[in-house]
Image 1: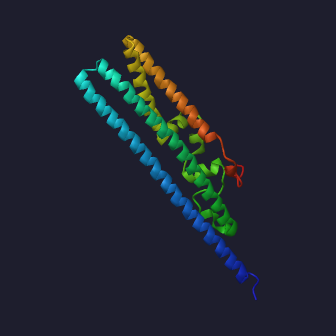
Image 2 (image 1 turned 180 degrees about the horizontal axis):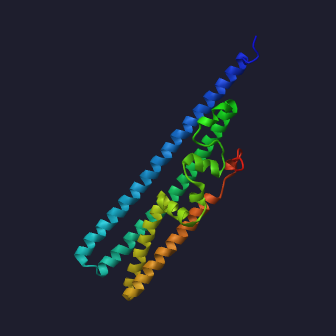
Image 3 (image 1 turned 180 degrees about the vertical axis):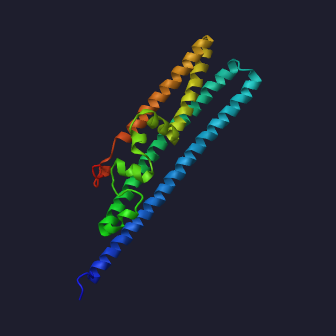
Length: 230
């Protein structure tokens, strides 16, 4: 009898492990799909609120010719839009953290696949390591571009949903700043400076908030199978 044939019990155990791992893998894929769906739904809701607010202000402006009534309506209305935008960005950051968690989970499952069948490693496009490098490889993101700093990192952040909405929300805050300056009879230059200050303040504050949301790693995401050096 050839010694290359594994016992039947060992074959059955390996098949059961693969079935369990595959079931968990499909579960994580379904959960990622729900995460993407909620992200797009949140963005759609915010854009609908923003569009409704802009249309309302356009109608009021036609009736009041950008007078005091327009300013008294525009400031609270845009404040509501600003709140909706901040809440949307907060939820998107949470969903991105969840998506990162699911990616790490699937990388760990791939690591388990390769422990059972290491000969399959050349056929894997995604990573089987559960650290940041492994997650970025699975997501198809260049680590140097995403986390290396510089213009590449800044442009990448602005392309994400939270980054794009941050610019829109900061513009809304700038409009509120300009309208507030006009409400207190500030000169045009003062309104422009107030708008710019509000825009920059919200951009910086949301950027710090977003960075804090991704720098803290919960204990269950501490790498168990880190990438090999080099």
